[in-house]
Image 1: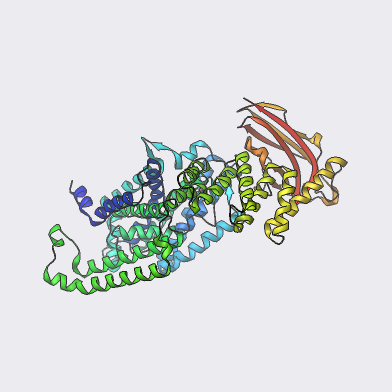
Image 2: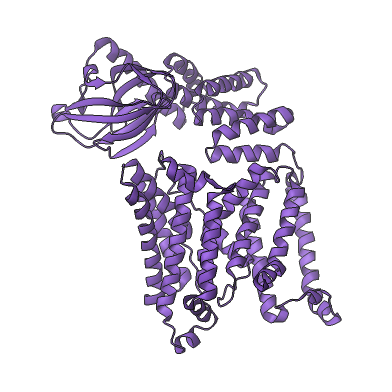
Length: 619
């Protein structure tokens, strides 16, 4: 009971309650069940890392590599799954990678004696770079099994699984820090490392273990994130998460000099960071201003710690009644602070006045846009439609129309996407929509038509893009695709094989059943032979529209990579010396008629063979 009383009466807990009330008053969407779940999930990801960071900082250290560990473990997990690795390796290897980073951090700090800031900054760069090198700098999309998706999307008695993991990690760490010798040793080292060493504590070993623990928790958070995103994002995942974790820990009351702090304080701090980030998103505050706010929060927390160290710690309720000496002591800094706040507010209002003009459509639009960015397309579309219905005259209504088109494309509803882009293009042409959006609409429309395979419509829309914007990357890529369409038509008429083809494949060597049942599993078989002196590395290309109806379970032999570009999926293989048969096991996931168009790619040159097979998926 004493522990509970202490926790509830802590200042950060009171601030958390006040923050929740303020967020609910600031946005009508904050209290929706869906948004509360989003807050809990987001706070859990940062919170898991913050608990590990808290352990390191209590011991007098810091770990800047946690965000990069999140990215690296997610990338490793995604590539392992795409490579059809055994499930135990798929789970074990990412933790092994996180362990390796923690081992390196601990070795540099504990054994070599580098400053924690420098050592972990080095590993932050190395781990991020390793992820980019490992994946070729590209995201790796993975169709994870349902059991793994439970990590991010499952619920236990209505509570999201990430939150259950966060709470379990918090309780376990609290037990270690409160009741085990190891925890007391961490506090002792942070308070006075020399005294701890003279007392018989193995300082190097204890510090080493704190970095291992922090890295493993970052790896766990990385697995939850890749489960949520269904991809490994080596360049974007975990960006600035180390700052969020540090902010959560400092807000929770842990001293930046070590020796004091609470696991439950870090828990509350993570919730605060999650609520602040969610509220900013609901209010449409941009990422740049969010980072400014988080930096200000850290500075404020450090200032409060400095005041605490100067004798204002251990506050009781009666301490909130100021004495004359206290008022005199605090009057100067309070006056200066308020003066600076008024001055800053005035400067912002006079120079950036649009920040103070709130468009009510901004909050629901931002919420929908966040869902789109996290690829939860089926939930983003209804929210975009709500913006259009409730705020038809707002500038966000137009952005919501674009969001519907993009989300429909991302979610595989190509008919809705094409209808939306066509409507947007018509309104731009008629002057209903400003001309500066014309390029983005044309660019996305052309990319969509590459996916649908509508060659005639593609030529029509691409002609508009080429006429108005001849020197853009989108135009150059579209030109390549147009040449491929024309080459395909010629190949279909002649039935010949391109002279520079690295492999030979004919329609008879592509075996696909004509009919399957929904949910049925079957094999797609493609036999290829080397093309003499032209033989080299190559990719088997298939149109993305075909994959709207099927799920790839495995491919034998495994391709080097499985990527998507130019509206196609590419399975990359090395040079072959003899005939090779590729067998892909598929599962029908959508009823309808689907067309398989098989081409070969060599050095980003797509060679058309005119091989087209049709398959019908019946209910």
